[in-house]
Image 1 (cartoon, helix red, strand yellow):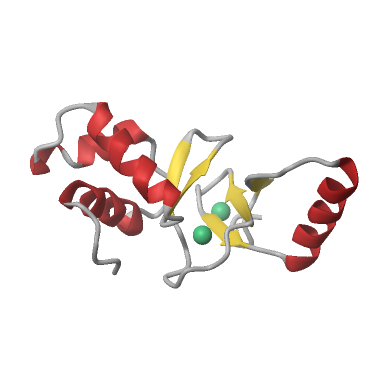
Image 2: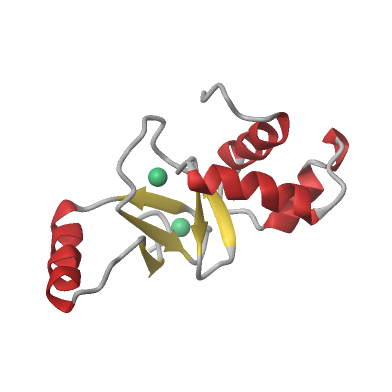
Length: 128
Ligand SMILES: [Zn+2]
Ligand SMILES: [Zn+2]
């Protein structure tokens, strides 16, 4: 576990790590009311720092958050997620070939990519 997190950041990260699927900021708030969280801003502030450090990812299409599936620092140039629409399971993976092709494209187009997120929606192996 990363040491230099604030109490609130640790609480938010633990909530996401325990969750079986992605959580919205409001669900996180509800789960942390007993810990003294009162306002969405407290959750958003903690999430902002966790996102910066790559410990948490935002799923744009769901407007929800997941803990990073890797406990070591992995390069987050490209993060891909497969989201099951039946059970809500999210699998995080990265793919060097896809990342390379996107980099080639960006290089040729003169586009400066800061972050790339790929979200695949469908059914997981268990639900398909
Ligand atoms: Zn990650
Ligand atoms: Zn599923």
